[in-house]
Length: 497
Image 1 (cartoon, rainbow, N blue to C red):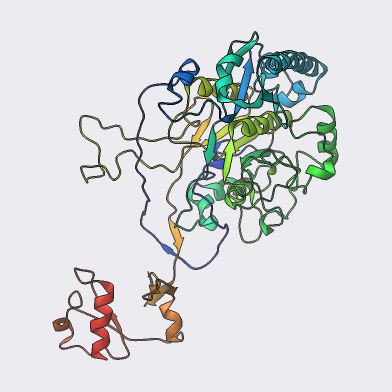
Image 2 (image 1 turned 30 degrees about the vertical axis):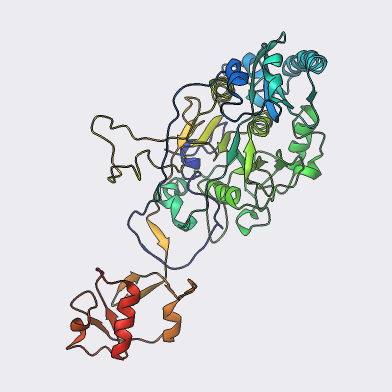
């Protein structure tokens, strides 16, 4: 696998590690030692059956759905979006077609149809279109807010193809393991591709995530051969209608490395946010500094922030808006490190699946997280963490990465990790920091003043008899694990000195 030096695709190597873990401060660079696999697990359950819109009112009370609750919904119309008229056989890139006279004419007709349906909705039900998004490229539709009981009424309006509630995505819980950016790209051979000159030149990747710390040192070096300049961005945003709104290049252009950024969740051009997940993802893709290099260090980045500040959540309507703009602005690849291990309503998933299919069929690489949910039998009632022979399938892969349109990107355990260690001869021995009775950790080696110490191998698990013929004073005692707790081992050893 490789990264194209130019053209319209950045292939799979570009983001093989994008989905790795959760919200972790990126780019630590301490001492490294080899590690064995250490995976965290959670329990997954599958709900049977499908939820149709026509059933919603009937099950609202039974399943806790409040008909009076105001919800964010997406309305899809019958006529196809702009990408339905684009052909990969043409000499135009998708963004060039969207910005052509024909593309703009189609978009204007779509907007006219949307105006008509939005008027019908306003006449029939109480609905708010304030700060709503309108989709013309990957889907013909728009978002709105209304009471749940109005969904079925809107569905019956002429011109409406589908209506569904916007799904809310949550970031995964913070992981305990430390991400090793210094080694992750080497694991998949990115260093070999870079040595051959494949570094993402003349390509741009749209990242739909929590934002980016644009001041981070990993993104300060300008690409040597960029796809877009500031003037290019200025021309693009002035010639096409974007969900990002009526902004200037001064608003969205952060640097030559990050020529476009917008917060679709909070509707402003500040993409820094308050969660590091997006910065880690961007670093995996295209970091370029003396300390760290991403998979494609010469690629440019579009930062499409879809997680709201202070909440750690993202909604379908914001994600579709960012996806619409990503294609309009000429993204070669679109990365979405988000998803859910369980599916949603069939109607909603069908609409989103079709939108993603249009993106993929237009020639844009669509990369989505397979998820961190591990497998479905961990912590099962049998106590084996293994499936039954009669039902061996235990896979849990996140939606929407299960759609055929996208490349489902799975995480892998890094071959190295950060750890304090001590040396025995030429061998590095990792250890965990000690903790006191209050649970506060401290580095025990810091109490030893960096001196060399003799060590004694204790022939047992730390019982008093194991020390009967040993001199452990001012030495390191190496004790085997066993039925005695660490605290008791230390207490018994302390009595001897």
